[in-house]
Image 1 (spheres, helix red, strand yellow):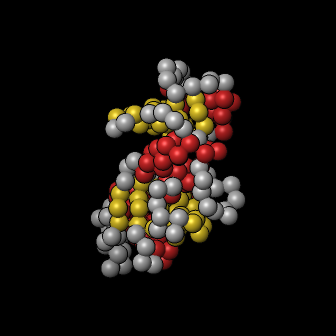
Image 2 (cartoon, helix red, strand yellow):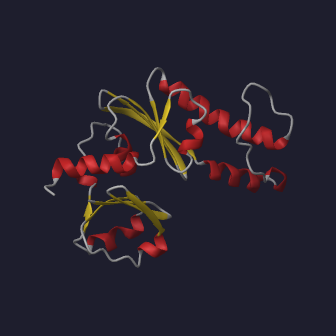
Length: 207
């Protein structure tokens, strides 16, 4: 079973336990030789994908209980194997979704960590810093790099914590492992979206 998660900048593949990714520019040259079950959030690629019958769009096959309008298929896939918990996908944006008894209660979106950094540098060159990933939330910052880091990481932390209550936290995405470290009872799963995709395939297709 070949799965493909197509984003705005990269396309990631999982074939059994073999994972690899490529840029969207490389993906435009990619020609599959077998069925590829995909999800796609890049509208510029949808027409190309429809033209090749080996690309199978999984979006219509998720049986997901939500009243959220136009919920992204990547967020649906990330939540699809979770019966109860808070799902955080930390990539170019940070999405947070709350699931209870397999029902999606809603969610929210934050800028990704790189977007915070870009926004600071656009305000002033003096705010162009790498963030301090070892920032201490228990002490007020005494230098600019720590002030920026505190503002970014603690605001993300508090919003997620406020949404979690007693639910388990499931992190995925490029910055997911880093953010999971701020929480005592967090699970990081690099393949969370792919697990949801695999479940949808197994529910709807005979392989």
